[in-house]
Image 1: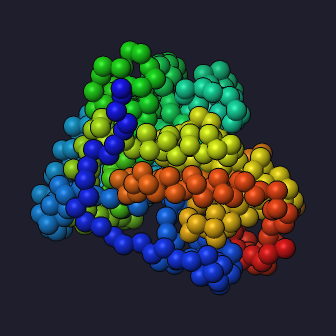
Image 2: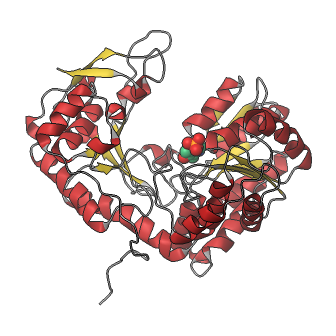
Image 3: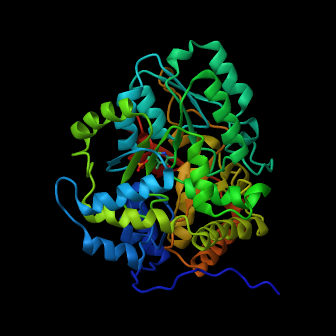
Length: 458
Ligand SMILES: *Cc1c(COP(=O)(O)O)cnc(C)c1O
């Protein structure tokens, strides 16, 4: 008999979470103008809004917090982090920043100018934002399979080599400062990129003289998928898979709030000395001195430890298994979820779940609200509300997929919590025919409306 999976840690400190009543939640969500971002965290029982900065630190990380050296320049905590980043990535230079988008801001200030083109696999919103803010253009070269939720492909984050080469051939190559490989591909649902693909992309980029950067927020999870799904890597250590992956690139930016296993922080690592020199000036202007870049000493110490913990096989196996377990349990109940299940989140397909609600009444938002009212679980809408209005016509844009994302924080919730989430969704799914109406927007901001929009029931 194979034994079931269980967490490779036990709990030393607990944080109580309040199990409210349905009546309380109905009142609170109304007061929050039916926007889940407006809820107070105490009003949420299981918070699956994001896996960014919401994980639990280990005893060893907390010990580093106590050892934090808060010297302005050259602190011991910086040295620990500097050593860890270079040991894992094998890149020559490291710059700390306060979070992932800050790393993008600093590095892109040194590398991106007006008219530049940056191909990649479904760039993350902040990455795209920092490219477009500099009047550059992000071109999505993800394989077509990524856009069909019913197709099984082990590496839906892969870059399509034909699409990439077309971008290289159709543009002046000097306008392409680098390409970005996002591992795992967040926008495509936490889908991994294969080593085979990374290698092939790297080879092509070399032949055109274009550097390769990684957006490495969830690189450890990506390396786990490589180990599980690519025969050649079955017996390799995760850290060696990571080193090999980085060897095919020239640098990386990373949000430490994901696979850094800390609550705040960001990383830039790269090989090119002249880019490093330009970037550190921007780091000093935007973030702080080059040996802290917006992080306190204690945070850098905890990150130095977290980077290694995130590469431990047992940790990754339990992390990914928990996410897969939740997704498969829901699929078993018949709840429509996006497949295959990605590394950090389960996505509910609201078009299939509640087709009875008119799409003009924000199906995914309605489903996310219902999940909160029924069970105190907070997910996030990734559908029409997020897609916003067309900037010219001001009409709502209706994306192909109306999703509710349930992102799982690292080392935070137990197996029972996952059972609870799956059962709550089954309850809602079983009475889905009664869902006839959704919500209308009563107020919205001119851009990025999803964070602050106000709704009322139709
Ligand atoms: C979270 C994230 C970022 C941005 O990082 P922040 O720490 O939130 O600023 C960039 N890329 C990817 C893939 C991410 O998931």
